[in-house]
Length: 71
Image (cartoon, rainbow, N blue to C red; front, side, top):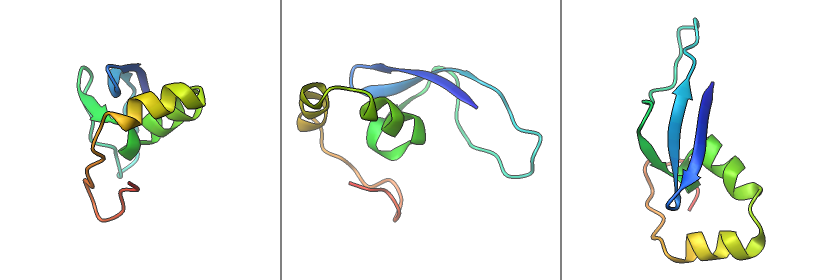
């Protein structure tokens, strides 16, 4: 489980609770990540107004970090 905020057009991870399961997410508290390629980032984008979303995404190139990244 991750807790993060939108800061300067990116996700900033504030806290993380590790899973006891074998498969885990690799992330670090204090790290930043592009909004378009993280689940948390997509949730943050979904709750912005259309104008805010357009302003943030219009300024950035959306790099493909994996073959499954939606750009």
